[in-house]
Length: 417
Ligand SMILES: Cc1ncc(COP(=O)(O)O)c(C=O)c1O
Image (cartoon, rainbow, N blue to C red; front, side, top):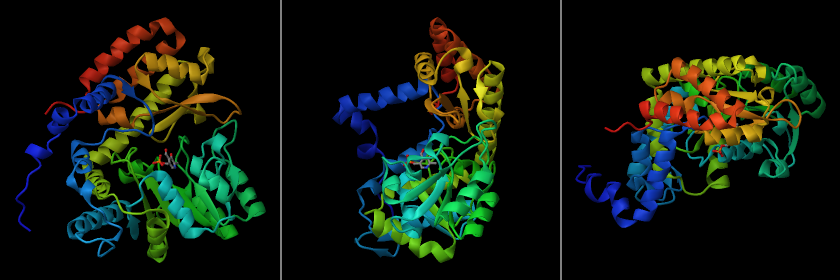
């Protein structure tokens, strides 16, 4: 079809500033916040302008229940091409037989994985929440804890590593219908083969919730769960650097069950602008530049872990294999919550998290965003020093804030074109 329209003029973002300056000011204020503070939240990143363009495109207008070629709405012939493209790119990127790119979020992808494989009341073995499991891994405040019977495995309190003997013994005792591997804060590679072995022994499905490492998998910087898990669920917005959203990967035999679990079981119309943005992100993730990025993310996280350990913080597992690490700031005389406040005042944004030791709140940090900004090992080593300085002495926060402003000024997330 000949294209006669452009995205200039009436569709340019300037229109927001003219029509609704109050809201435009909020968007610019958030851009300013993101550009002048350090984003150390392990689940965040800066998407590319191309991803943002797809998100803000007229595809947002389109209703598209169903799947390409089998929609409940008319006029889907063009968005069908976008969804097929996203699916093919995801399949190629992860070496999967089948991909579903419609999940609105990581949580919806997990819900769909359960819906595809389980019945309410089934027993599921997953990482316990105090050890790094996600809300969807059995929290009583979440659908998962209400509809399924979750049993939690944990990490060894000394090493911080997943206790595979405990996983095996709990699986033998409880005979779960599914085992979930994946975490919000585990800093080491997941041993998918070990989980597969236990799942096979007790006849359970293996669900890999790879929300965090999937971007590293795309860049060849972490092992892939695809050859081992029956279903892989993931987010597209963390290291993978796409739009906020979820996806599922599986073998052909489960494709129909997974698709039906997403639509019509747990979702309605697909968000075509987000799916187009996922396609853009998968395209970006297939490039050598992204492979280099993923490896740099891990190199930076290692330097950060070493630097924080050298400053006296207790680094869980002694380091990291991934983009994230967790630390206990107690040796510097502050608890996790106080630490988060001091760091925020110094321009460093991050989360508190549970640590293997009961009732201790630590800090979770990640290097995905700062690496997208172009920072490398030298900058990350300096960040570790600034981090500890701000923690040790509240009055040093102002000086650290200035240095953070200088650093982020030299590495803007969205450089002026
Ligand atoms: C392991 C894991 N699963 C699921 C999710 C849920 O993703 P979302 O916040 O997009 O629902 C997250 C989010 O951080 C996660 O870390």
